[in-house]
Image (cartoon, rainbow, N blue to C red; front, side, top):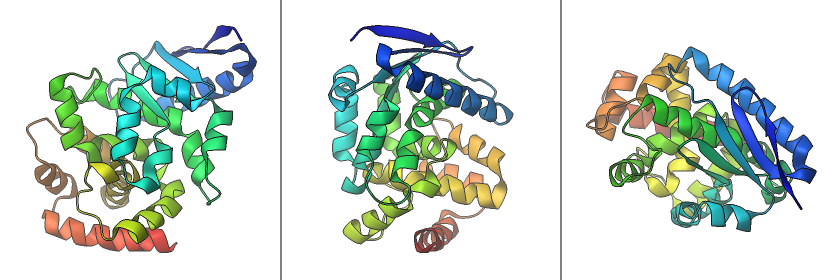
Length: 249
């Protein structure tokens, strides 16, 4: 099936011709999402290529780091690694493929359909924090692993996926016990966003953007204490309570 292009002011999608309607929906949603980030981030990437893949195997071939990131994630979070990002472009599954990937639990489909937002959020984060990818260089990749809770957590939070991941978080806690704080790399996508969601509740959306811009020399502990304005031990206690309330809702 031939591949064609669909464009909007900030994005250019490449996709199979049969997916023209779905591609337009993805780009319109990304334009809306991009506009919503303008009040908290100074730089918003534009002229972004969005490669829409009809099958997971095609996505994996185009984004070879993705299978590795999925493999090191906790099992409850693996299905939500449904896209990847690089300088000037994101790779995502087509909406129909995302729906097929969803589990039967509430929120799974809704979280997955926000995957294009998640990947574009990574580009916004990288544009506003030079220590974060893209591009993937040795230094930024080490930062990505070391601060995975921030990199993936901020993207999950900004994409609006946190409320829809409740069932997956319940499964993660049931299978893996009480998580570390801040979340380790294997829990970053599922649990990192809850740190930002709690911060927004306490100090607002701008505080979340400031945390996402934490410089490279800042440790996780320092970044969290500065963002929340109190010792990390106090934040951790609040986070444990937040998780309990979030998963009981």
